[in-house]
Length: 331
Image 1: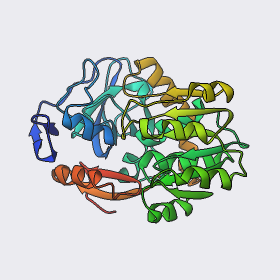
Image 2: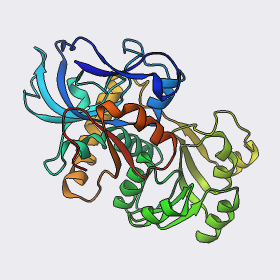
Image 3: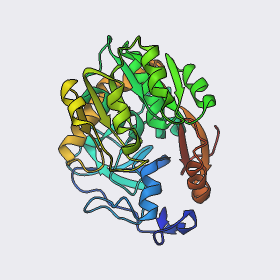
Image 4: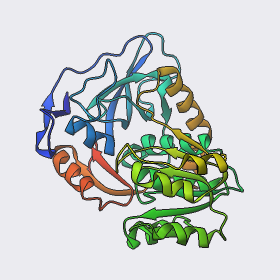
């Protein structure tokens, strides 16, 4: 089968489409013929050599999410059958024509989602859903989503709105904030310096927010605490801006605040299975009804993988970038 391969750590040009043996499912696994796969920031980091794959996962084939058709099932699998439409997350090697995955780490694709749309769902919606749950999402909460125009950002915005929360967001440009407003953003702030802190506090009547979802990391650590309401929570999902920063612990204590770090890729199989089950129960029905939807910025052909990486690195995208693996581009 064909797969995206990292020939060596480096820029987008180290990515090649190579030929490797098709995987064979073990007793508790499912073989999926991949129709489309999502591209994520983690893939860029892995390409550069900065995001190692978990033990047992090929380090030279990126890809954390996929959508496709069940092609074969292991001898112990009874919940899936050949030709079922499924999507899910994997520890790696998802950007290939076939992928094997644990049977309890995939979910059925709603009938209203085509393969490209389905591939834009698993990583960002599971990440956003999980982070919001850890943050104590509720209808009366005020939520701040940084990088609200990103794949996870657009998913978190929609899920928080669906729960009845009031959502604020930051982005690099006013254009992305305008697009996010169409998804239900209460108010957006261009992240240029620290002016957004006072603007957000004014917008909330000085109360601040109950929950912050942060993808930037160290540069926003203190600012996040500054805008946090008493007993609020900061969920650190990414460290695109750096992983080391300073924090006023006295303010953290006075606010009785909580900072939580989270990452899906390194979790043990049982935790991933529970998250997949919760996602299927709580999020898939929202996708099926259209209350929330994957936001797709651009679709690239499988052979255009280097261009897809360059485009993501430009930070121009609003929503997801998807690779068409086994289906034609129609978006």
